[in-house]
Amino acid sequence: MEEDTIVAPATPVGVGAIGIIRLSGPDAIYIASQCFRSDKGTRLETLESHKATYASMVEPDTGITVDEVVFLVMRKPHSYTGEDVVEIHCHGSPAVLRRVMEVLTRLGARIAEPGEFTKRAFLNGRMDLAQAESVAELITSATEQARKVALAHLQGQLSAEISKISRHLYSTLAALEVVIDYAEEDVEEVPTETLISNLQQAESLLQKLLETYREGKILREGALVVIAGKPNVGKSSLLNALLRQERAIVTPIPGTTRDYIEETVEIEGIPIRLTDTAGLRPSTNAVEQMGTQRALSLIEKADLLLLLFDQSSPLTAEDREALQISSRKLRLLVLNKLDLPANPDTLLQVEPLNPIRISALTGEGLDTLKKEMISSLLGRVSMTEHTIITLERHRDILQRSLLHLQDAQSALSTSYPRDIVATAIRASLDALSEITGENVTDEILNTIFSTFCVGK
Ligand code: GDP
Image 1 (cartoon, rainbow, N blue to C red):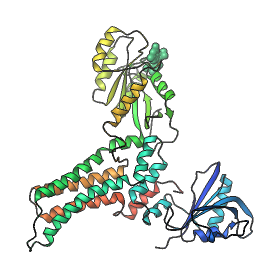
Image 2 (spheres, helix red, strand yellow):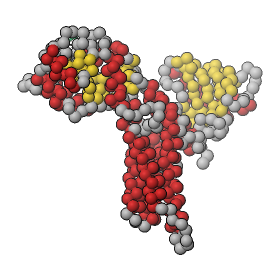
Image 3 (cartoon, rainbow, N blue to C red):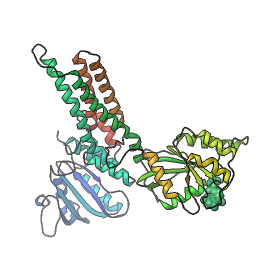
Image 4 (cartoon, rainbow, N blue to C red):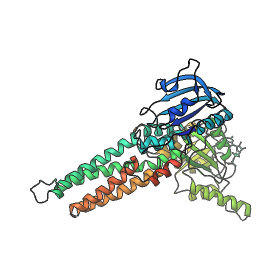
């Protein structure tokens, strides 16, 4: 299919040292050549691929200079999109970028839709769909761990894991189909146990991958950590101490919505959204009741709860109430005010619950607390050893694939006709290929790429 030539700024709108405008498509080189002027009289068509050339960008009809720029020609197929690409590196002012865009669109380039460059890269076989999606993931990664996971996806780690699972399914399918296709002849059947064991291996790989989604989502969207406890235990002191120690995240994290005040910091490479609550005291006062309601709903939403106690003061009914309410949540019990003399009775009651001891005032114990927070949230998943899924789309597909696979297994073990087993395996494989994009509709592609930013 012959595509048109698209153009978009690749750098954000605003003032910067350099702004890059990118052209991609069959006329990219022709269009750029119309506004390229070099002192030596060189023509853009003759420039070496992947080599930067300093030149003037001019308006073709008047010859008036728009900016002093660098042209970078990348000839197909060795470019991001797989098409001819020309990048124009100009000065990064909104006025310059606007003018350059105007000149290029007048010469016939069309302004690119969101994600269109990456979509073309996918359609031209430069990357599979999982890799293309990871480009957006990498661009929006706000923390160190999110960056690492996105990069691993871009480098094909997820695709490799999917093809490992697919291989098990294909070999089972092949074994089944030989028997189906040559049923009349005397073909030796692969024993059912071998087939079952093959499917089990695929199932266990699928399950493992699916299980990483909880952690993957935390990596991408962050975990909501709620600090709770009765008034004056030191909730806001702890919140502030953590905010002071850790790097605040300024980029909005994709997928998060909030209806309360929270601050996001990066702890051990993980985005942590921190918020504290009012007390949990049952009250007849309307305002206090609202506060308690809000606290309860926050506790409900929390990925992890830090339940604070004050070691220097007596344990109260409210402390016990908080323990009770949160007993089913993922939580850490935190004994604060370590720098003050302990109340022996409080110690006696809280100590058996293995609290983490801290002083929000002096900072003592905060490192341990942070380590415990991360290991509670991420559990067993090791970022370096596992392929992690982070996107809901991938999770849904894997779940669908797993269901078909389980159908195949039960059909096989209850001696259903083998073509029924084969159909279920094929459905499982079809689902998997939606991740890598061998089997996706235009509609799905459009949905995926429309979430990209313009220029990518
Ligand atoms: P909140 O009501 O739970 O948010 O509690 P605050 O953070 O406002 O703290 C209540 C009081 O306890 C303040 O006067 C804090 O300075 C003090 N406080 C908090 N943490 C500590 C601590 O670790 N040690 C000491 N000595 N005082 C603390």
